[in-house]
Picture (tube, rainbow, N blue to C red):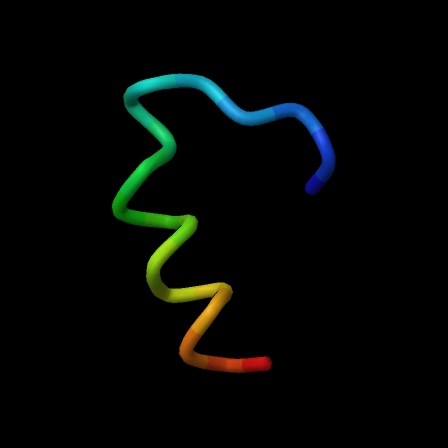
Length: 19
């Protein structure tokens, strides 16, 4: 998703790995 919060950082890493 576009909106990112500090708590979302782990999800960010996973999303990056999926890309």
